Amino acid sequence: MEIIIQPTPEEATKIAARIIARLLSRKPNAVLGLATGGTPQLLYQELVTMNLNWSQVKTFNIDEYAGLPENHPQSFHSFMRENLFRHIKIPARNVHIPDGNAWDVEKFCETYEKQIRAAHGIDLQVLGIGGNGHIGFNEPMSSLASRTRIKTLTRQTIRDNARFFGSRSNVPRHVITMGIGTIMEARQIILLAFGAKKSEAVASAIEGPIAARHPASALQQHPHVTICLDDAAASKLEFAGYYRETFRNKPAWQR
Ligand code: GLP
Image (cartoon, rainbow, N blue to C red):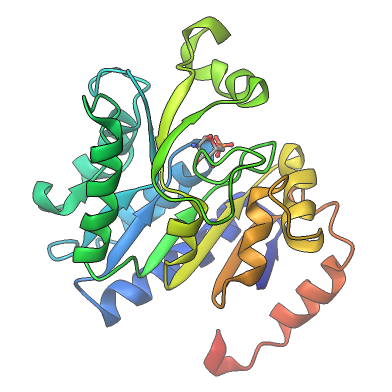
């Protein structure tokens, strides 16, 4: 895994945005996996300022709350519309966000997986990480081979996301999420994490054992992962000095 540590979230985000911009210029019909939450907001703002060509890009969001109306201000449909889609020219037919109100959830999840395969897979998956190490909404003890499915949120995730809903009781208990097996099939993954609150989850993901207890640790078995951190999120990494040295000494052609 390539670990990039920058002093601030803005500097780390700029590097991630450049990787995505390079992909879109190389492959105008690229398929992007997208995440939500406070972390990728900066990334989407940066991508919008880059005026990229989204006309042939396809997107698949990693998750959505179950049972929340799509136009609810805290749905991930609303998040993506407000933070990215209303600022770029991407055909609506190319945007895919899990349907949290599907009548037949299992059938929907199968269809979502089929749509990803029909798009020839995800070229680059953007990830954040939850305080308990979840990716998407794959909570601890999720199978590392899981597929798109319904999941129940942990108390910690409900607590962490209550900030968007005014109270814990308003946070949906169930979600639809791509599985870890689904995520791992992306050809490239960029994970972003900022702030001291993520430092434990980041250290477990990068330097801990591969374990379902730490879902993001599955990424250690992926061939092309870039993890973009600020100093605070990297503060518990034992080998932070090595990662910084490696990035500083990257051959020019690799930058
Ligand atoms: C939610 C999302 C995840 C996201 C996590 C962290 O659980 N389902 O995709 O990574 O929150 O969000 P934030 O970036 O706001 O800390």
